[in-house]
Image (cartoon, rainbow, N blue to C red; front, side, top):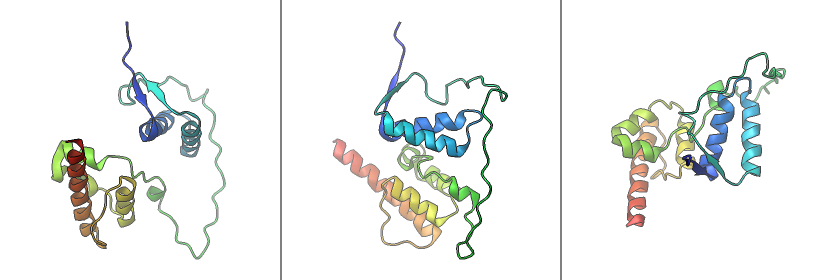
Amino acid sequence: MAKNTRPLSGQSQRKYFRDLFRAEAGVTPDAAERLTEACTREIAQIRVRLPMAVRRPLKVSLADAPKPVEAPPAAQPASKPAVPADAATFDPHAFSLIVVMRKGGKDALLARLTDVTDVAQLRAIAKAQHVALDGDPQTRDAILEALVAGTERRIAHREAAAS
């Protein structure tokens, strides 16, 4: 009896490792990131049986889990403003602009992007997902419009290249 498996490499493999380590009880976000980096460096390709959404959680009791070591808070220099906590955990690959646009259309993409309030984070999404922003939009609304237009262009270019 054959088991269905799926090969992963590159960004999909990295995302799988990141999600796997973050879902594990007792693993700090910093440790999960270090493990993700180490596995990505050392492993070229993996085959997985189940996607993370279907995977049953591992049964690990908190007594068996290693206790996270908390570092003392570092003093912030007076010249630099404090970084908001959500900015440190921002992931520009949390969702795919192209997938959201193809499955839900323009309105779904705009709805998903309106959750992101920081202009720098919107620009980071565009850069990470290789979506060009026309001109140099400065306002949040202009960046949202440019992201949608850039995503439409990217889809059109993909379809043209595939034909």
